[in-house]
Length: 81
Image 1: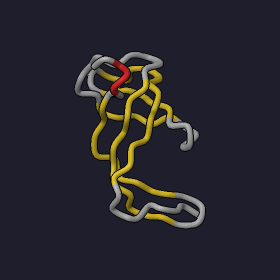
Image 2: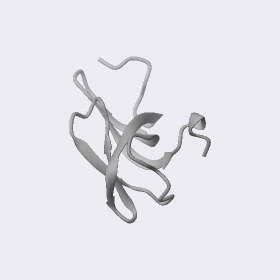
Image 3: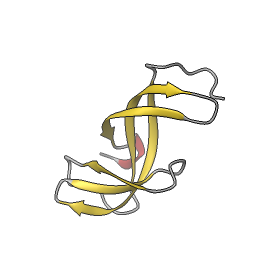
Image 4: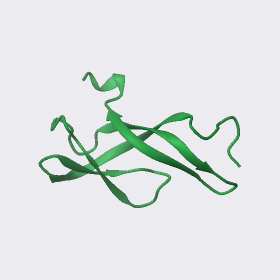
């Protein structure tokens, strides 16, 4: 069970860009999710293999999983963006 976190807490998940799907959307890999997911990319600067941060608030916590609502994305400070 998740400890030290509560519903409403802001969390950051690091995802890896897989490919650009459309001009404004990229496919990302989230290690704990196990399948591709796409997000809107307003920067059009991200590239395959680049790490991005997905920021959101926790909406549900139980013994087996934590569910969060995606709100925005940012580049990690190490990316130089």
